[in-house]
Length: 129
Image (cartoon, rainbow, N blue to C red; front, side, top):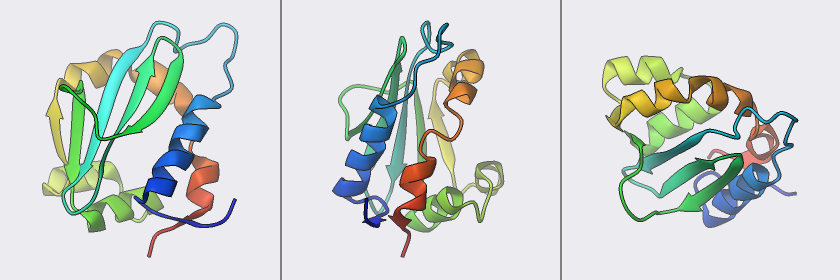
């Protein structure tokens, strides 16, 4: 894979490919998880991580209300994605806005932690300029 530009259509497709190719352990800790997390970049795209009883995908846009919505500007999104800034710091500063049902994150915390570095390969191939 060659470098893909962060937040581009190609990047979203790579993220979706990584999500769909997730190795599924037995037993699968995501088997009972169901959560949709939408990320909105105010001066960029909107996409969703969908976890539905073991199946994972990343989709551009999205219809209906997600369980949780994370909203930021492009600079904050880049800083968080590259690890230059922890999401918690951005949230405390008001640069990352959390909306929707925060309980959905808490209810699915253990399952979401299993995803770990699912997108590490895409991140390594991403151009953040």
